[in-house]
Length: 439
View 1 (cartoon, rainbow, N blue to C red):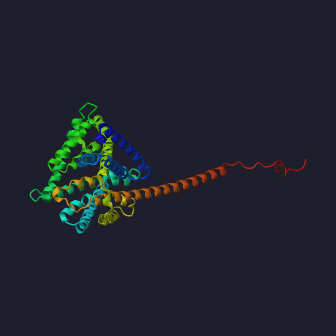
View 2: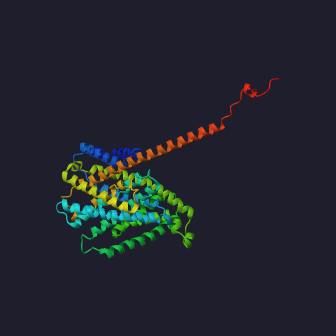
View 3: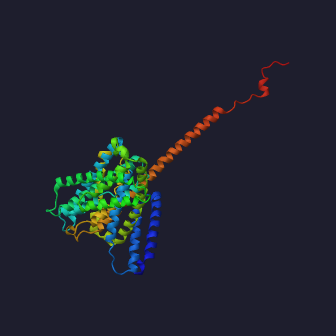
């Protein structure tokens, strides 16, 4: 096919990356998530491809690979920015609790809705479909909260990262229960998590100690290849592989904490820190590129007409209402009254799509409309956009008021200073001589 020639693909890929960079700039100014613009670009490309190609194309293998690599890069990127300090222990635990309760609560209510309104749903299948719809998207949240106050930004990074990891663990636990012969049960599940953590810690120390001895400049993609290999092998062994990526990121980002005591003698600080900084840059760039192509390809694959189905809209709106109602209760309990704009920053995205396509064939239902997935993703993203724009205007108004108050105070100080420094009037000659006797 002429449209898919090598040069056309290179041109298309280059233009998409350039547009994505431009979308990021627009997102920073308007608070409209770049993800929505990328999905829209994908929808436009869908109709362009249909014009030139009549044979349906299967983009799922590409979408799956991009999703997995993007997930790894996004979690690694988030982990590299997390500082583990004693004073941050409480915010981390609080964010983890909010993420876990929000995940379970949202999944439970979404399960009841799907079980009631989607024909052919069993409770177990409903849980499988509800779990992806209940996971926060760190792929959307992390780039979008850079303008928030530091403590709010930190909260969202922790919460979305934990939501990703716990959501994926929960999803694959539910998948494992489909076959009673292979189901491990709660005890086996906990054992699986503990085994993964042990492997992750050992692998993290080994990677850092080995790579600090490599003198070659071109070793960062070798390191990423090792992490991808560990993730894939972990999946083959039915481990919670994302924990390996998270723990490695935490270890290399907090080497002072993990290489304390006698272990400090094994660490070559300068080389290790160089690995960290270079990895941080490459991870950031790679996550940007992979995320870009993932959402564009997703836009190419979605069926827009499903959004206009009444049943899709009804079920999706009920799920959206449940998401924010549950989130309101949890945030009020844990954060008090200061819950804006955090309440509305709960988008669904990359993980939701990836896990939806990972539902096993034996659990898939023809009666489930994929439009529900798209409706919830777009709905939560638009609500987040509205909240972020409103918060930005509010912050702008507060800053303007503060600036006006500061300016008024400065004017008062200047006027007072000028009044104090003004010279006394010089008496006239007549006044000086008024009391003198005539000669």
